[in-house]
Image (cartoon, rainbow, N blue to C red; front, side):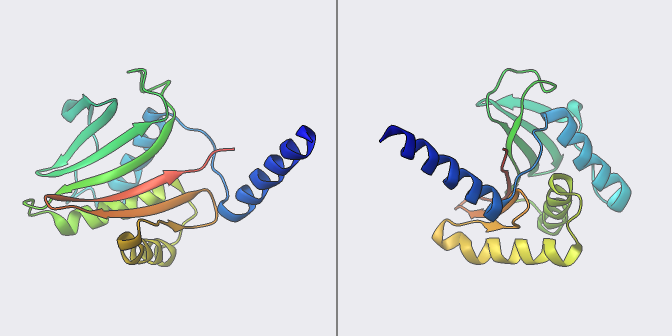
Length: 168
């Protein structure tokens, strides 16, 4: 009896990997560096990279100030305070609604997706962001089938573009 439950669980897990895909485990420092590479290679004249000079650690999360009212937030699976050890659970672009940099935040969100899944095309990224906004009213995210999903959260004072990672 117990054996079939284990086999069912393994089968469910494999089906999840097939449906949603998975990505390699990466730490905070690596993914922030990948994000910064996307920013610097594509928009260095108008956007700031994430810098430890503007880093705040709060509620077991890493908050990098990018522009006034716009942040890169990195949420580790387990917070240790060591960005070289902490494996990223999800990352998000947090935008205060009073910020005048909403357009820049959308561009940052595109770079965040590309940092988490480098093979994503611009068309795929636009589709994920659009689907995430449509799904936001139901609390669902947009899956790319290759290990990440994109979520959008709209609150009274802020909104977020989220990139969730699936690990094997």
